[in-house]
Length: 239
Image (cartoon, rainbow, N blue to C red; front, side, top):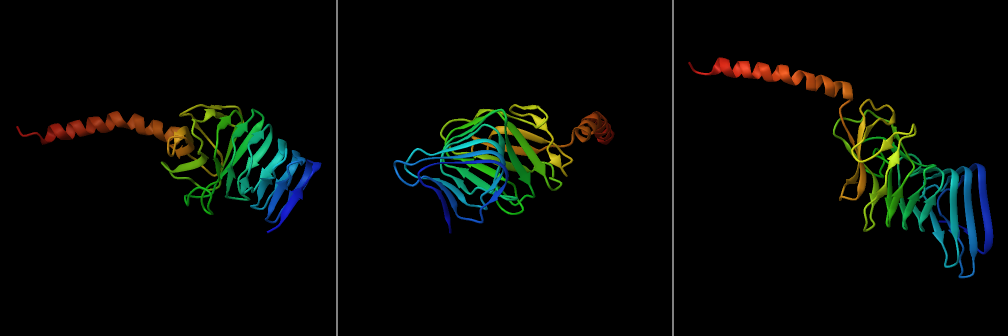
């Protein structure tokens, strides 16, 4: 288990390419006088399941672009000004121990592989935030299997004491207010209903709902079904 440190007055600026860690953690500072900054403005930073750790000094992680993926635990608040946050390498879980503040130019990417549950193989990506959550950016849902109707996916676990502030939008600009129905990208034929009060009442969940055309056909068939039932009932009444 390796620790990659930025120990004193140092700044690292990633603007392109791919940086991959095969485990371990990235530590920003390791003493009270350290002033370390990691700037992610482009490219891809893949932590391979490792953590972003901080020392006792003045450490910052500036996330304004690029792609941050496969982070196990982010041990500080995350202010995501831009770029894409992708929990896991494929399916995985990222824990932010502080608050999560997502700006309008930032994207949270969530993959759905199956029904095994949040953060496990064959399940779905999940972001866990241990303090406050403020949302204003994009939710990009990648559907890798034909999700069945009524399936529920927990995608953001807000463990702070207050409610989630703000909402997501889709990549094409649809505002995802409470109860909005929208489509992900990929294999899924059915759309999702989003709620910000799912799980224990403070989580973001997606529920698969019938495709609108199917739902419309069902609604249109209800009067005919009711008429047939009434006729059958009348036919069976004793004279």
